[in-house]
Image (cartoon, rainbow, N blue to C red; front, top):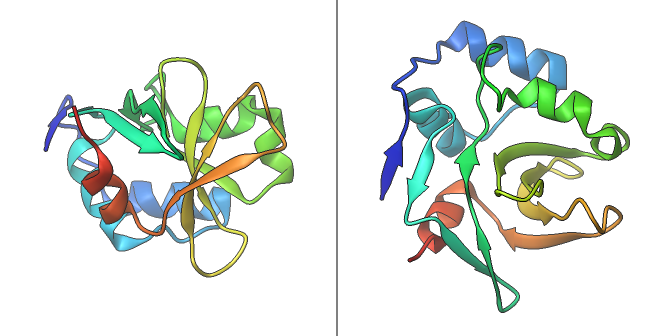
Length: 135
């Protein structure tokens, strides 16, 4: 697994700021990757969900000046504000991979911007998500 990123260092203060605004606590396996590879592009980058192959373009960023800044994505995606979905990665087509913070499990789902009322279960953990990536 490789992450193409600009090697931005994400500090605990930055994480705390994002978590406090979103009112969430991200799982540690996600934070370990985001701290090292903020906004990174994975290789391999395909993931199979219910028999369909989707593309993981990049992780969100915790840096305000990045075009994939998590708080900007959340604010600009009107539908997310009325849900428990928090974006963690993007595909190239405007769809999002999100944590669903509706319950304590914090599962990962795929949200299609063309079918906003439905999110598809992907997996239970970020570690599992990374393990599902393939060529």
